[in-house]
Image (cartoon, rainbow, N blue to C red; front, side, top):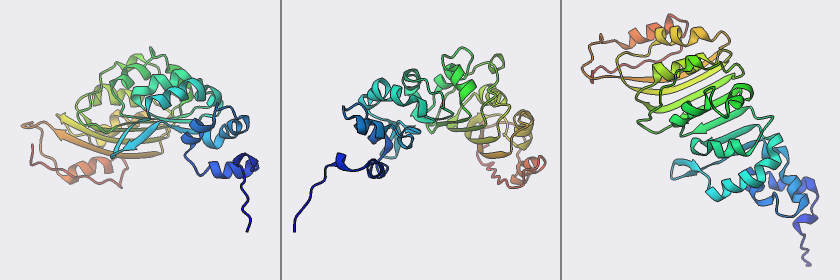
Length: 273
């Protein structure tokens, strides 16, 4: 029997694309763009590979950014060539400036930012930010995640900043928030007046009151006339020896039922108060 060897480049574009689609898109972009083979370069720029860019790697159950050398090459060589077709970026907050300064994506509408620290609040959501046009005019779907415990988010007077009218979907996940809920989180949410979907996953520590249905409605939901989907998990830890009245599961549940939220589960543990 005779064996026939076929060079990869001898395959038609349709078959090459089928093969490449089985690989990680970041690997395809890094390996094929600007390597001196025009045909592979053009195939790698297909929207299949450029629509969503994930600059994270998972190691030992932790989330961190890709290697610096990989990010540098994306910023200098790859992103400028594909920026017109990028719609969704996923990255760690520490490399926010490196990514956003490298490109001007006219079709970018979605961001997911991990390990968000106080710089997110201080620099990227305010009128003074170099990226305010991105958050205010382009982004319609934003997710901000911080799984670290004892996360500190600096307070900013958001009443001095303009609304974010284009933001339709917003997700915020913070593993442990010691301060800033009333002074930062609530004012920030109020700026997103046209939001249609909201997801909150918050662990709020060292508080003097529970975050219940009445508070959520009066301080947040009443400002969102377009909201039709609200998913939340809010855990409030009250300061020890606080003199607030002890509440039962039914007490908290009732505050949500009163504002029309029937599918809500509440657990109150008074042992530590």
